[in-house]
Image 1: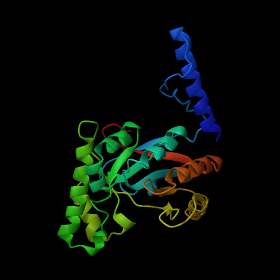
Image 2: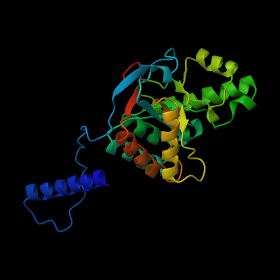
Image 3: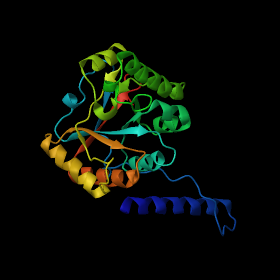
Image 4: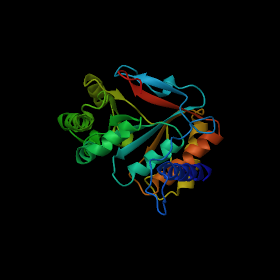
Length: 258
C-alpha cells in the first residue's frame, strides 16, 4: 500500500510540474509517464544475476542461503501478465517467464514487453502437453516449436531464450537428455504455492514460505502470471520475501547478463 501511494504521489507531482512549465491553466491535465521509481534498500531488488548457458546445470545448486529465483509459467496473457510486471517493477526485482509457444505466437508484443522490462525468458512447450505421455518425436516437436515461437517473438530484441521448463515439471532421463541435445538448459522448481488451486493469495504465499523453510531457505519459486489474482499473490509474496530477509537472484543470458 505504501509503495502504491508513493507511485500516485510521484505521478501527481509530474502533472503539476508539466502544468507549471506550460504557464497555463490546467483544470484536467493529461496523464504523464510515471516518475522513475527509486530502487533503494526499502525495495526487494535483485541481489545478483546468474548468467546462464545450456551448460549451467542445476540453478538450485548455485544459490546461497536466503537466495531465491522468481519464475512464472504459462504466459503470456495480455490481461494478467501486465499487472504482474507492474508489481515486479514496484519492488525493483526481476523474474524468469517460461512461456507457452502458442501464447507467444498469439501475443508477440507481450513477449517483447516482458523482455523490455528486464526479465529473462524461457520456453514451456507449445501447448502445455505432458511430454511424458507423448512419443519421443512428438515431445521433441512440442519443445522445438514452443522455443521457436518464443524466439521468433524476441527476434531483433536480444539473445535467444535457452531455458526450458517441462510442463507439470514432468520429465524423465530421456526427455531431459533430448533438451540438452537441443542446446537448452532445464530449469526445475523448488517450491510453489499451488496457485492453480482455489488457494487464496495469502494461503499460497504462506505455503511458499513454509516450503522454503523446509528446503533450507533457498530455491526456485514457481508462480503463474495468467491466473486470477496473480498480481495480488505476487505483491504479497514480494513483500513477505523482503520482510523475511530473502534475496532475489535473477537469471540472465550469456550474451547480455540481463
